[in-house]
Length: 166
Image (cartoon, rainbow, N blue to C red; front, side, top):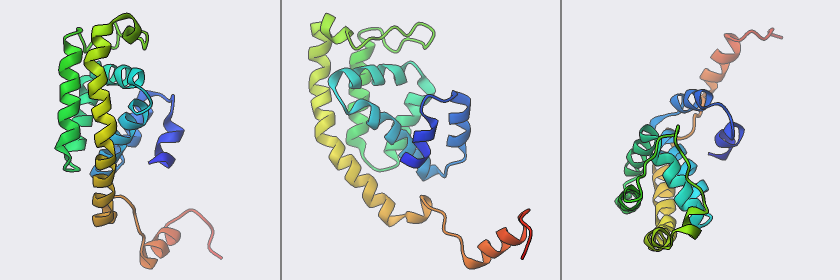
């Protein structure tokens, strides 16, 4: 996913949405996991901030959970739902218009930190299984993730291209 995601960092959400819509459904599954996991894995503060950030965007949060279900790992989805329940007790999700979440919230609110800490620990414990499940799925269904052109397709693409023939 890195070749797709890296050029999109910091780009316009409309562009990200367009690229996402051009992915296969399985690539979309992987994209959503990758987007969440690679942000949330670094620390409790990052787990908190990124979860709150995606919660403030209900369409994206729903998509993350839906896409993770497609890999057959209900444990991670259950954990995300538990985290969502905890954050709702602190008035999350907030809209993006009023998004004022800070990593310092955990320093200033020990109860919030104590509520999220075991969830983040569980996240760290179960994501290796999630990654393994995703790897197994990809190996069983490579055609859902990569496009392999036949010699005939390549010939047709070259024939139909704007390049001058030799």
